Amino acid sequence: METAEHSSYGLSWRALPRGLWNALEYLLARKGPIAANLFESVAFLRTAPRLDRPDVQFVFQPARRLTTRLPLPVGHGFAISPVNLYPKSRGRLTLASPDPLAAPRIDPQLLTADGDIDPLVRAIRLARRIFAAPAFARYCAHEAAPGEEVQSDAEIEAFIRAQGYTVHHPCGTCRMGTDADAVVDPELRVRGLAGLRVADASVFPSIVGGNTNAPTVMVAERAADFIRGRAPLAPAVLPRGSVAHRQEA
Image 1: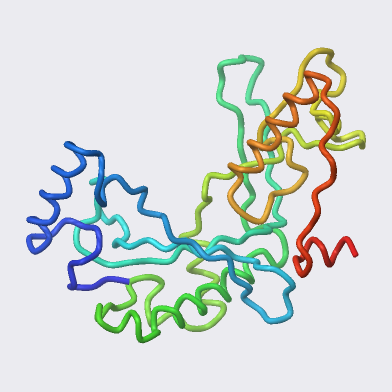
Image 2: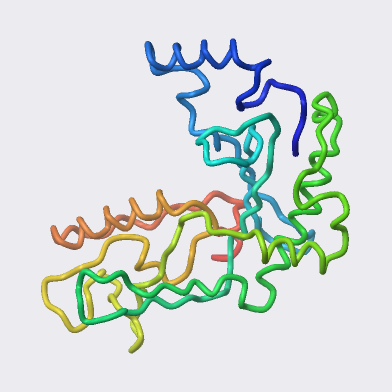
């Protein structure tokens, strides 16, 4: 969404006094809007009533999309980036040559699995409903992408395939498991090698339904316990009414 209203992050003549103050505020006290990471508002949503858990994450950006090589947007606006939480597409990571310093071949094969694009199509329609809410009326914004002319499912899908990108949470290239194709066992030991464990997001058998940072910290803590020979913690008591509690029951 793009707007002439100048309260969002962005470079413009109208926002210049505020921008200079924000820069000074950051340089002197490391505070203010420039100290933020910009993507501080997220929501986990179900795009269809039949689902028992959220299937997309909305990442709200209080700024116009970048249109130049500058690290800050020129002009003003806001956006929602919908993230498919449970993609089924599986990529490949292979060696390019015997040279250990050579970059590997990475083919994420995004949106190749049947149904992977469907939550994103529904998410764009949901994002439009959100931006049409009264709370956004004061900004008098117009839709810059995909654009109001893009309406059918086929048109939205074409936009997603042309503009889609990852959110930098790769995982699964050293999958944990007990089968012949698993790279590490349930104690993170690399199969076929002694004295080597892997403790990062690459051991996830499948991606978690959210950001991967906290689960990766958990994997690292478990690895430390395995190495030290500590007994496992007692099972967690799941809150009544939670999805996990219902599945366990």
